[in-house]
Length: 256
Image 1 (tube, one colour):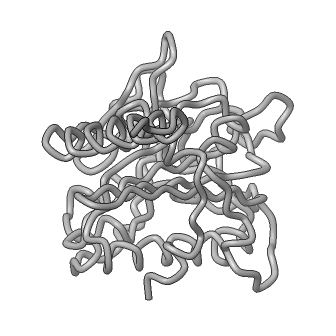
Image 2: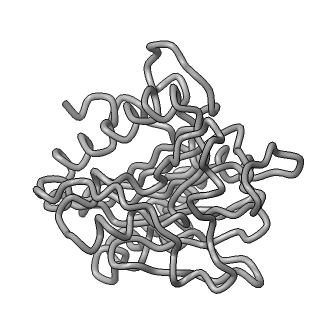
Image 3: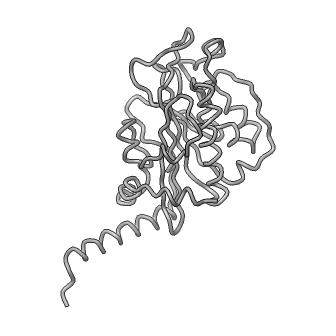
């Protein structure tokens, strides 16, 4: 009996995705790291990596693997903000934010680093800060950060990328000209032996009433169009294409 051509193509595609999926598990890569552009230089600390934008005086993105044992530590917030010694052009500093009216908003949250004194201290580098409206930083953005930690309680490990959406013409603060982003994004990827899921959020840097964070959820493809970045590119090609077009909000929302 002849096999339907369309069915055969789908079967082959499925098998290729499955093979790529199995290989990804056997040979895990740094799935969290976005693809570097020409002239970009990655800077890594103990628990997160970033690419710094001297033009905007903040990170373009901060990426890290968030594991269950990272969120159950007892290290308290250091609240000791300081310049990042690894930024060759020098990062922003205290004076840039002083009297600005903006919070020094974490990209990699301090609460994700409570397992290690060094990681906690490094989370307060100014390379990990971005000017956020206080009501945003302490409101829906904090709610999103908390939700991401809830994911890990059920999934054990996820890959996280966070950053400001940096464009021309933004308001600046401080002598160094730190740009104030109008929007922020966060992307999360889960990879296991049987499941791959990804989700992204884009939120405006302003006070947002008590809405569900999922009102701001988008798929990875749409985030890439908005930022001009290539996320989760280390996934096998067919698997990357599939997962980035998909937005399974129920998967993430039901992790409770």
